View 1 (cartoon, rainbow, N blue to C red):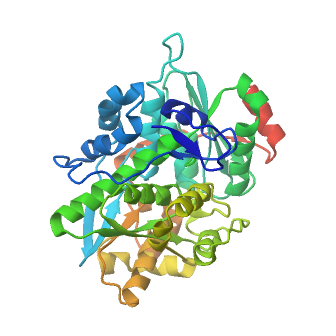
View 2 (tube, one colour):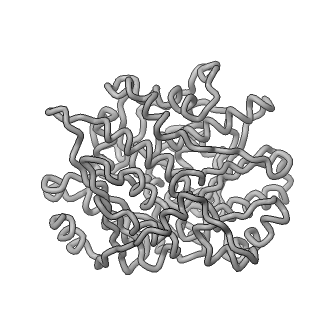
Amino acid sequence: MKFISTNGQAKAVGLQAALLAGLAPDSGLYLPEEMEPLPEGTFDGGETLPQIARVLLSRFFVSDSMLMDLTSICDESLNLETPMVEIAPDTHLLELFHGPTAAFKDYGARFLANTLGRMRGPNSEPPSLTILVATSGDTGSAVAAAFHRRPGFRVIILYPESGVSGRQAHQLGCFGDNVLALRVPSGFDRCQALVKQAFADTALRVLVPVSSANSISLGRLLPQATYYAFASLRHFRATSKPLSFIVPTGNLGNAVAALIAKRMGLPIDRVLLATNANLTIPEFIETGHYRARRSVSTLANAMDVGDPSNVARLRFMMAEDPALREAVAADWVDDNSIRARIREGEARYGKIFCPHTACGIEMLERERRRGSKEAFCVVATAHPSKFEDVVEPLVGHPVEPPPALTNMLNRPSASEPLEPDYASLKDRLLRL
């Protein structure tokens, strides 16, 4: 299997080259050269997430030496509790927040770390890499946890100083050792732009080999497709009907992963994208014209993205498969609606929602008011206790963090300031 750039100006490369590079040489994002539907019966006998992941991902590992490691990679990375809970008739919640940092980013980050950690250079040594990541909240802590104290890797996290919750900021700075958190006095889009500049700086990359763990990374994207396969197969086996997903999304990686699973023939009907008041994606889906915007601060801070990186993958896939366009819809949710969905979540659904999941619930409510009868699964992206300042006043009581998050919050936390310009970032990378 080869992987091609969305910009079409770089040669196709193998799996390990695509994983290490992050961005393609033409600044495009890598996608599998082929995503043909898998034959009927491919997943027969697969029940657990690691089992289904091994079957799905073997298509992409098939011509790579790491194929022999795929089973152990899936077992080590994806052995997370992944409940799909029925919260109303034909309505499910896919809880992706039971990993070590209480957010869906744990799936992809753990897979990427276990994959890169198995790569070997000419001297049979693991690569010496700096994992450079911009985060709007949850990506950074998931990547830090996955690579913490892993030989051969350093992690540098850029995050918007005023754009994450207090508990998210604490998580980002609580690791130490080979993990450095840099707080930037700007929005997420600026952090993301700085990281992209570093990847485009070929002179820097000679001195400081860097790789991505943002959602632009193929190693993050492919494993995310596996929980859509897992959930849709579970539903189809029980009902003989396809499942539609409502995906809260900011940088679009989670949404593209769902579309990859659909392209590969999993029983997925529609993929609905729920954003906050950042209107870039709903506008693009409605008009077909892409217009990047300055990010807007909202209660769903991890989705405060005005220029999503993965729009390149979304546009490429829609152009390649026009039928996919008919399966995708998008809508945006304001802060008042987010508050309302959190406030009524326990009484209506027996669940407390984080602000991002609340966007998905609001989109679900709109679909039901329009008369939609299809089976929906809302993707629950983070544990609500990570956003205590927003959630607890609305539900009227404390929200207990899960044990792994409590352990992180009990550690000391430290970060460094970084000016929002590339010269400052480059200087800091050269001083590592």
